[in-house]
Image (cartoon, rainbow, N blue to C red; front, side, top):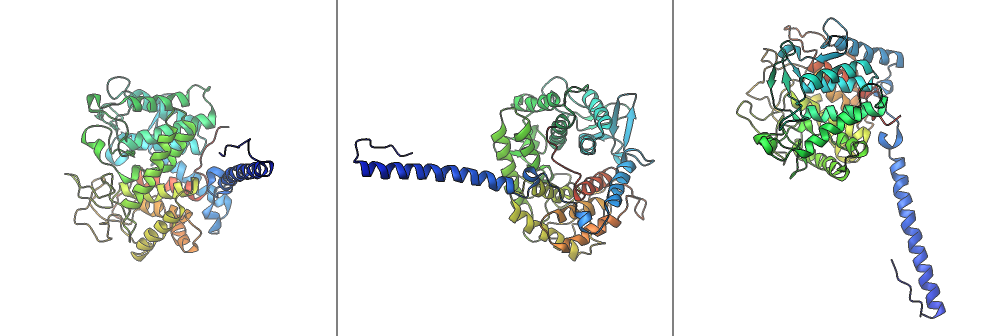
Length: 432
């Protein structure tokens, strides 16, 4: 700011005042313009408007609603459901093929429930998760055991998978915004308990923050060596933005930094031609092989396209790169046959020697889960060519494959999430 020289001659003083007032006006105008630019941003956080790509593709709203309702019913109510009620007040989501319940599926189930306004389902899953899966004391207090046998209630692993906590926190924040905190569960307090516990982890007992504080990136697991590498499908910049907006725990800027870091990380982790990512990487985005699996694009990585599409729609802070990404990954998979592309690749698009098995089947297939998430990238940009993936998903069915393999858990949840995204039903839930 200029300091006025009050001893100057009147004419000079007038000029100084004029310049000062003009600069102040320009400064304030810039602020207003910046705010206007934000409010005019097509990202839904600012506009509140969600695209319905199915409708753009020519499907009717009643048919779209029925499609989503059927997918939900199949997973939560039908004969092949993955959701099981326990007593009068609890329920869990099971990975049927692996005979367990995991924080991934439990927290996904909660996200589905809050998005579709299924409060009883949400509350039941949360009560079960808190009672049987969340650690109530010790170095892991507040965190969750990532896998448990729902029949014996014996934990298959005491440790956490960081993405489970990520979804638990975000779904609880959304529940607080959706239903308030006075109907039996204080959702906000439960979300804060996990966050506050996270910030207390300092390496005691070899347990750390979910987010590697040095790199500002989510860890593969928040303990031991797993704290020093990551999983690209855990990088959800849109969720960090939600935490910054609604968690109100004093770490707002850190979460926004993590969101920006996640976006830059994805630039590095996605192959420049194919758009594919490895299941695991180091914090630079370089593929990371483990003793049990060579680095490649496999089941975890299927989620990356959906996560990038979500960030594009909700916040739109990295549109240019994300639009290029969508073109790359859709172009690559289209080149492999839109109705036949397989589900595991080396990052350059070649077939890997090692095939990761699932449910006792060791086979490449045209999987519904990947077909679903790549279709969700049609939310990015306005390229009508991408509607071929949307039509392919619309015509797909959650049913056993020809060889008998059937995965209503992972295929089914990614299918339902993608239907919700493409119909505009997966939204930022703001306080009512």
